[in-house]
Length: 279
Length: 266
Image (cartoon, rainbow over all chains, first blue to last red; front, side):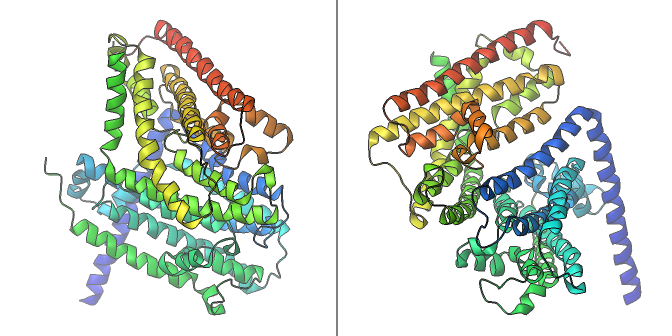
C-alpha cells in the first residue's frame, strides 16, 4: 500500500517536471519570435546585474577595504549570492506573476488543466534571458577565486557548490512564499522583491558592514545569512560578527530545507484558500 | 489647457487607486534604503568627506534616491509601456486622430503619476529613515521649493526620454529591449548607483553632463545645499535645457514616425 502511494507520488513528481519542461520550452520558442529583443534583454540582464558590481568596484576605487573585507572577498560574496539568485530566478522566478493571473482571473485556466498547478506557475513565461545574470555573476565568482587567499581543503572546496545549491533553494523558497502571499494580496509583488533583491544586495556585502540587529534578522527571521554569509565565513576563515557557534557555518543545507518546507506549506495554504474572482 | 489638467488629475488618481501596491513599494524602497545606507556608511567610515559629502549627507543621498525612484521613474515603467503596446497593436491610430496632442497628453498623465508617487512613495521612506539615521534635511522652505522645482524638471526629462523610447516601437514593434537598456542607463548615470561625484575622471565628467543626472543627482544636490546662488540657477537651467531638447526630439521623432510608418491593421 505504502509502496503504491510512493509510486503515485513519484509519478506525480515526474509529471510535474515533464510539464514544467514542456511549458518552459514553449516559452523559449515564443521568445525567439522577437530575436532582437531577446538578445538585447539578455545583454541587458548581463549588464543590469553587472551594475551592482560596478558600484562595488567604484566603491573600492576609493578604499582598499569595506567592513574589513577586500575587493576579492566581496566579489566572492557577490558571485555566490548572484549565481544562487540567478538560478532560482531562471527556474521559478516568474511565480511573482501569480498576482497578475489572480487579478485577471486567468489563474482559473491553470486550475482546470490536467497538469500540476505548481509546475504551470513555475514555468509560466519562462525567461531564458535570465542566463544573463547567471553568466555575469559566474564570471565575477570565477575571478574572485583567482584573487582570494584561501587554504583550499576538501571541506572548503565542497562548501562552494553546497552553498550555491542551498542559496538557490533559499531564494527559490522566497519566490514561492512571495507567490503564496499574492493569493491574499495580489498587488503586493513588490514585497517579495524587497526580500529577494534586497536580500541579494544585502548578501553582496560582508555582514560586518551592517548593524548587528539587521544581521540577526537576516539570520533568524529570513535565512539570507545562509545563502552565503555563513559558509563564506568558514571558507574565508573569518570570525562571525554575531559570534554564533561555528556549527552554524555548515547549517546552510538545513536552513534551505527548512525554508523550502515553510514555502511548500504556505503554497498549499494559499492554493486551498484561493477563491476565483467569480466574474 | 483644461483638458491636460484633467488628464494629469486622472493620472494621479489612477496610481492612487493601488494602495496595496503603493504600500508594498514603500516597503521595498525602505528595505533597499537600509541596506544601501549601511554600505555607504561603511565606505564613508573608511573615507570621510568622500566626494565632498559628509556621512549624514551620503546617507541622505541614499534615502532621497529611494524616495525619488518611483516619482522620477528611474527604472522606467509607467506610461511608456502602455504607449509602446498601443503602437504595437495599432491602437495609436485612434490616439492620433483625437483632438489632443499625443506628447502633451502623456506628459500630463505622467506628471499626475509623478505627483502621486512623490507623495505616496517618497514621503514615507524618508520619514522612516529619519528615525534610524542622521539625515541632513534643509531648514529653509526656500531650499525645499527649489528642490521640488528641480524634481519636477527631472520628471520632465525622465518623461521625455521614456517618450522617445516608446516611439521606437514604431520601428521595432517590441520596445522591451530598449526599455531595459534605458533603465540601466538611468540607474547608472542618474546617481542612483553611487553619487556621480564618486565616478572617476572622464567617466565622471561625462556622467555629469548626460540628461540622467537631471533625474536624481541634481535634485539631491539642490536639497543638500550644494548648489546656491548662480550655481543653483545654472543647475536648474541645465535640467530645463535637457527637458526642452529631449521634448523637441520627441516631437521630431513623433512626426517622422507618423509620416513614414503605416500602422498595421489600419
